[in-house]
Image 1: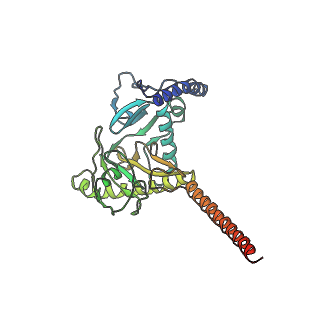
Image 2: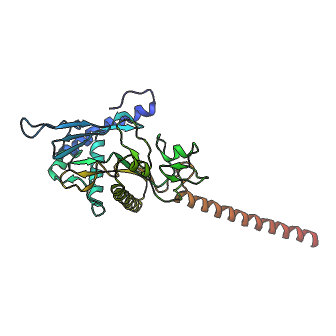
Length: 316
């Protein structure tokens, strides 16, 4: 759980979270699901070995042919472990599971379906073992962000060449990118991700040009599909990241890790700072304009009546 804080807002939020837990546990246990999110796996065969890797949010277990991804309740942001949120892992894992299923027509993924596992441990996914490319495929549709690698962070400092893309002058925060969706890769790291261009990562041997072209095409297609689907449900898919790897058994490139589980989504109608003019705000402005017009007409009518009254006094 979160550490104690002197902030009344944070203390109130922590108290609400604690109040939610009994209700969540009642629902989950009624469905036969787990009540302990801190899962530690062991080899299924006595004497077997399993390699464990602990990431920022996920723990990965590897027995040589299959991997098991445990999405924890840890909250990581700005390259830091901040706190733990009950059942966050189950929500993120369930979201990814849904998106993996919805996008399999675009690119194959690593998920091995196991309905019983999903019921008992909804924060765990079994997958085909892949060798990941050391790149995060970050897709961006808007001039926004606050992290060290965010496009707005660099643009606001005067940067106009970002991950190999030329950016025009005059953009403000949160506007839709006039160039369209951009693929802005970063190196994959447990500590600090670094921006890199497609040309540079191929030059450094991180990927072949052929593999990059394939993954870049799929990243754009996934993001476009995600934006369309999100918009149909009243959201804007602002940015996200994808990861790809090569199946050790088939040599096939697969979508791995997660998909759209923690992207920055803006509700349609939410005006974030200066750049996005939302529908309710636009309607409100139109309504105010109509009211001003009505007041103007009323004022003209009153002035006309007053003029007629003065004329009547002068000539009668």
